Image 1: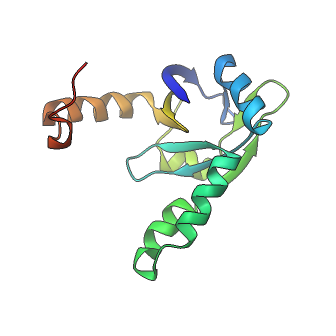
Image 2 (image 1 turned 90 degrees about the horizontal axis):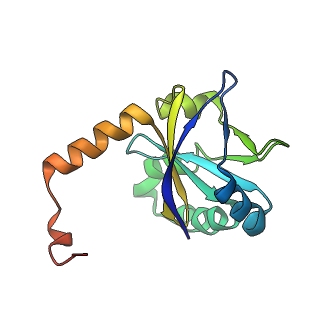
Length: 142
């Protein structure tokens, strides 16, 4: 399970170094083979390839009424591998879709990661806090 936030930078070619703690886990889990895709919240999703392959099968079975959502998730999916320096190359189309600039955040979300433009994530979190906790979390406490 992946958790925690990492503040990272994209280089001029659109490459991002995966933090060592996550890189090691991903190398063990999937030999560094991952899949990126677009998310409608304005970020990218990063899945270990075996996890993505299960999700892909589920998404492919959605009814025709969900075709637009299949395009969002499947049509934008990109398989990538770590390079020798532990970096991944994020395709220009995906960088544009998520508004990724130089400063990015990688968020562990259990079985996958979210990759956000740092400013966009801060705005999204601020909006969520301003909106208050959703009713589904009324019984949740620490």
